Image (cartoon, rainbow, N blue to C red; front, side, top):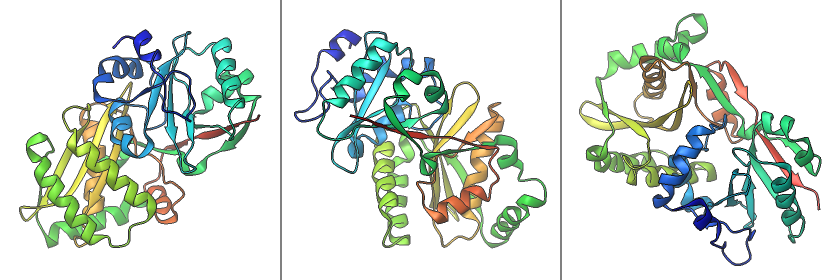
Length: 312
């Protein structure tokens, strides 16, 4: 599909109607090369990730006249909002977006905005209320740290993996299309293992199921971990240019002590083997337990995320 053809389609009634097209698998040929050319430091800006979360956020997309790519999505308030424009957004196109936003009967949000956009588009930001969105900041680790777990600060992680080695045996295999039925079986075990999931855990499971259905078609890869021959953990990830492995999903049965640490270490080992410097383990969504867990691995830095509220 050409850019002009995509832009000629209209959004669903009552949404932010700027000529957006609903996201579909066939759009990969247009969107994936563009997103690789203009990599975004925050997670979620890959075709595979967008398609995996599409059932929840109902993404739509369009190119501006200046060649920037803009995604819209439906948030918890039931209204359609925007993600940060990616690529060359000129001032005229940006102001047109702002004018359209100002005509809506609800306050439009621009989510998943990185610091560079805030600093390099003052004419856009001056029309907005800017919020530092700590819950969506990304945890960036050195691949060598996660792979080696060296030094005193990682001693508890190493001890848990050592205990696991004394308690059970595990094997690791690629999670390709042939292993998808096994991974789906594992999801059923994981749901029974985690009764009463939180809202973010429920959504994450919906997205993971979508990702598994599309393994091999999204540019994502995965690993399946078996304990004593039975599926027990998995991870899905993809390389992000120029130097980062982005971990989209990690799941492990709680009955196996140390298995979460094993799966986490696998991501670092994959990144190091491929010559990548960093591992992005995405955000904590404001969940205290998840935040504590991610901080315990000593990130090299947090990649700031901002949320913009367009002032009408």
